[in-house]
Image 1 (cartoon, rainbow, N blue to C red):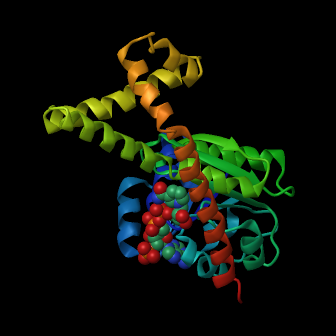
Image 2 (image 1 turned 90 degrees about the vertical axis):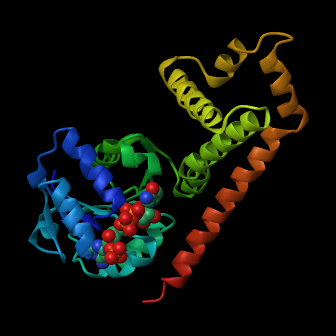
Length: 273
Ligand SMILES: NC(=O)c1ccc[n+]([C@@H]2O[C@H](COP(=O)([O-])OP(=O)(O)OC[C@H]3O[C@@H](n4cnc5c(N)ncnc54)[C@H](OP(=O)(O)O)[C@@H]3O)[C@@H](O)[C@H]2O)c1
């Protein structure tokens, strides 16, 4: 599979790094990147073909990965002459397939993805949606590329990428917030700052690793460590009294609504040709 990246910034580098680590031949990867600094960074990390503008490698690619910022997507796509058989995968947040297809003159071999920042260390999770015109074989190709930087899951409807944005796209920020709160609470209760931070970080890291390696759902793992009349129960009871689950749901709903609005704004602002 020949892959051409349109945009060679952080996300493209994360995907290329994952693909190369998994044995993809670097000769099958090409990149078009307008920024000299990003071109230099990429060239120093990987022996891949990096061009300043779309060239023959882009024309020959089986898959084109759109990896520029959403506001640069329209002009980036205008610079390529997409081939009918090429699969285009967009990782640009918020840009709908309807908008992308219009910018590509009605092209329908399109996949849209929502990755997240842990992809930068190979620990991301991306959700993908494909238009019906994308074959199973092409979906496999998209999954191979996105799972190079972590896990990949499919959603059956494009609109579900908005809740995905609110859950896993924004999710790392919620976890960082939880880490901050745990550390701050530890400090308030008398722990040294560094100790409280280390406890918070490794608790979240350890709990996530335990949940990932155990076959049990998180609710069972939680019950396993909550003894009757014990310390965990005392803390979790306050979560319940304060209705933390309902509040978290409201926060995630707000994130999802905002993702929908931003997609609409992006389509509107950039919709005019
Ligand atoms: N980073 C994340 O964790 C994350 C998570 C989810 C989704 N995403 C999505 O992933 C996409 C890429 O994000 P990123 O963090 O990798 O951005 P980035 O580091 O800014 O990379 C984009 C690169 O594309 C270059 N570029 C702009 N216009 C171009 C054109 N016409 N042709 C070729 N290259 C062009 C940019 O150069 P200039 O800087 O000179 O403009 C920049 O070097 C975004 O759409 C974002 O929404 C990112």
